[in-house]
Length: 153
Image (cartoon, rainbow, N blue to C red; front, side, top):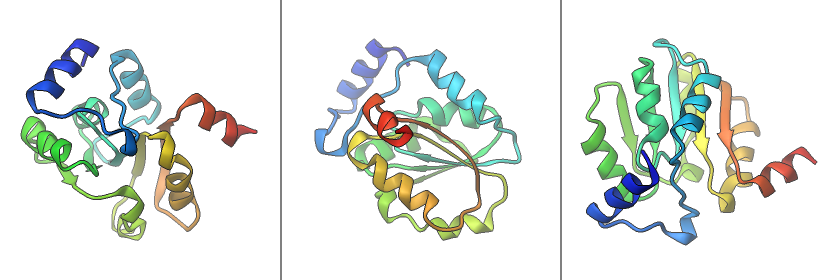
């Protein structure tokens, strides 16, 4: 979605970004395609997406044939995704990713993690997904520059 489409969609569904959730919406379609291409998603994959927002990455992952679990804390956005993307290979889980039980992913094969992580919970989420054994074989994450620098220091 272009930035103007994002604004229009957010107005239409009466959603404004919630600062405490660190919400930001991916509007660069080239970047969205690049993220999904880096994940090398196939129809055999089970993609877990944290904070799908309006579904920029979600739709591209579904287009690759993957099963997608979209974890969205904002009830309004979770409802929007369910209605907009009506897809048999999509499950939208309306919960906080920090409360998500990573262990349930062990029942799936080819698990890949995609996320445009909010700054305020980036470190907590990353620790959650790397602290314990996990079936996630690949992660492609977008972080704010400051957070990426902290992790790479």
